[in-house]
Amino acid sequence: MPRASLELASIFARFGAAYRQSHRLPREHLRTLRAIELCRTAALGGHVEQCCQCSFTRIAYNSCRNRHCPKCQSLDRAEWVAARQADLLPVEYFHVVFTIPAAAAEVALQNPAAVYNLLFQTTADTLLTIARDPKHLGAEIGFFALLHTWGQNLLHHPHLHCVVPGGGLAPDGTWVSCRPGFFVPVRVLSRLFQRLFTKGLNRLYQKQELRFHGTLAHLAEPQRWARLLTKLGAKPWVVYAKPPLGGPGQVLEYLGRYSHRVAISNQRLLSMDETSVTFQWKDYRQPGRSKRMQLTGEEFIRRFLLHILPLRFQRIRHYGLLSNRRRKGALAECRRQLGAGVTDLLPSLEECQAVVERVRTESLHRCPACRTGLLLVVEMVSPRRYGEGVERVEPVGVNSS
Image 1 (cartoon, one colour):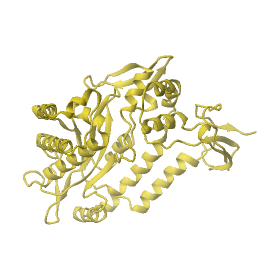
Image 2: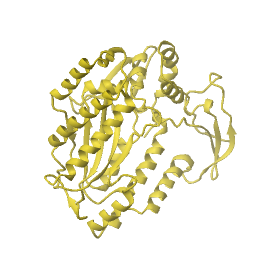
Image 3: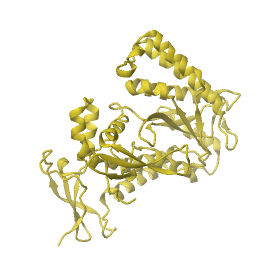
Image 4: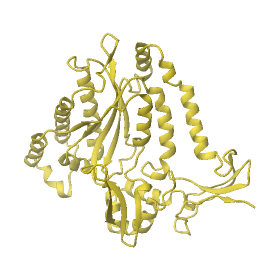
């Protein structure tokens, strides 16, 4: 993919200082703004690389490694997707999305760790419970869930993307498959999810694990909180089951698009002037049409910061047969039950590790000029102090004479 002409770092460099002066920000927000702004600049230091086969030389500045930085996710994404190959089964896969309504999302915005953890747990309980029910699948399933907190317009829209194989292990240990093209009824999932989440949210409130301020300060009053719970139960919630993903190959393609995604990529940024930022977005109420949105620099940063996750918060989690403590033995049993041909579809752990190493080599060390030689470090570049002529654009390679 060609490098974007406008980058998030440039927007933060232009509007970030004024935003920090006019807003009181949590430490994690300040750290993220600064990290993205300085990513791959002289401020973080780096090294000089030279190809062992040709005369190509370049300066490579260090990345910030912040998980909200669009420039730092490609390698992590490729490594994670390659490692996930060992978890796949030769069956049809399903994509199920769990979304909480706006009233609950407002509570999540002021209590992200508590409510996002609740979203993960109730989603897992819902899928595992319905799948175990003999009226539906009657089996233990495994799946993983990815948290996204944004919509295309950068507003707060927390939801979980779940990737679920089409079957599981019955109580007697045999493999049970879903009907082709159908997992379980989404209305059944929706009702249980709504009930479990609302009960869990009230439990957090009763334990005084939720904090409110600003426009939500009134929810500290029990009567106002009771009204919110009534509102959450008034309308059915939506659990969306997308068309089946297909087999393992299609799942890997999906993972490449969704895992390690950040709120907005550099490729969606269109232009910036002295006061505003323009970016591309999709309005899913009008499928197939791309739109442009222009925001002030201050509003753009405000919306981006809505999606900074709490420190060390795990946004990709595995459950059921794919949970860490059960994965190895459960997958071996599933493959045995599914029979011959499985080894042809599923790479070994050694093959997955080889893929990861190849990704690292191609991304970090392969010469972009001759495409055969490897880039070797010939000199270290010390970090510059912030503000001392820091370059804010990623340097390009320069052929040495």
